[in-house]
Amino acid sequence: MVNDRSSAVSQTLRDAARLHERVAGESVEAVVAVADALWAAFGNGAKVLIFGNGGSAADAQHFACELVGRFLRDRRALAAIALTADTTTITAIANDYGFERIFVRQIEAHGRPGDVAVGISTSGSSANVLAGLKYAKSRGLTTVAFTGGKGGPIAAAADLHVNVPHDLTPRIQEVHRTLIHAVCDAVEQRLDGNG
Image 1 (cartoon, rainbow, N blue to C red):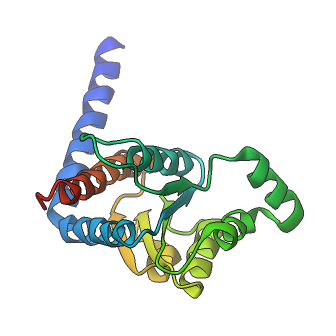
Image 2 (image 1 turned 120 degrees about the vertical axis):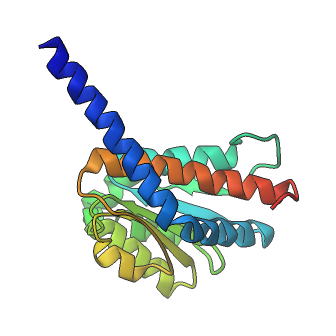
């Protein structure tokens, strides 16, 4: 029994490592493009709005906190808002307008041309993330999608797309977190004048 559990843990770690290696070989330019888009927005006094559901909501909050606080370097605070953090707003919008509009309504309130909207979806098909990205694009925001699988309709809705080509949500989420860290690091390097 112990050997079975150990084998399962080892397999999980090896699968995650292989997927990270694959994405490292396929997605570097996409990650750099996202970091450049964020850098340009921050340089113009704009902000980043980040959103997703479930684990992707947690990733949205994590992403925002790394930008507002700091990632690895002491530097100025960067304007980022996770649209997943305010339960009062989310539940009011869901109650009054429907769950599909929880991000649209917040983008309407906070989004301005030149801002960046980042939608995170492991399936690539979350209806409220798709609606948020489409609405953001119609309002003149740059749109970014982090997806899994084949990217789904969300990939097509975004100006910039970073995909984790896997079907298991936990593996996709693990790589999404690493990709978020890579973007934050690249942005901070630009702030230091090193990138």
